[in-house]
Image (cartoon, rainbow, N blue to C red; front, side, top):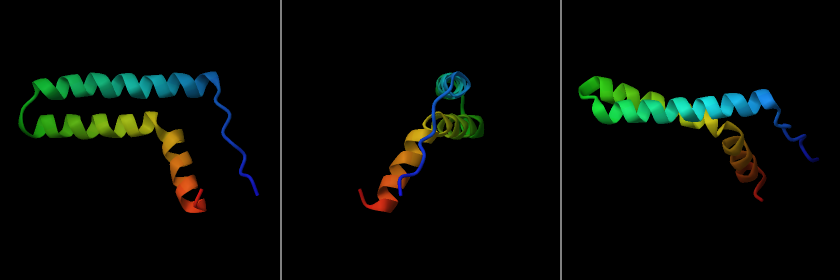
Amino acid sequence: MQKKRHRQSVGTLISTLSFAGVSLALADQAMQAEGMRMLGLWLTSAVCMAAALRYQIARAIEKFQTGE
């Protein structure tokens, strides 16, 4: 049984672009920071990029689970 795909709306596109932009801005700040602040910024940047790629990640997991 085929699962219904998520239809990308304008709001979804805006939030995806926002997550990606914030991720890049945080990565830029992390390159200039030191110590624990740098670590926190890199971690937050990675989480924001994962949020921007949330639908691609879900698709990859679905394919892995179904064995396609």
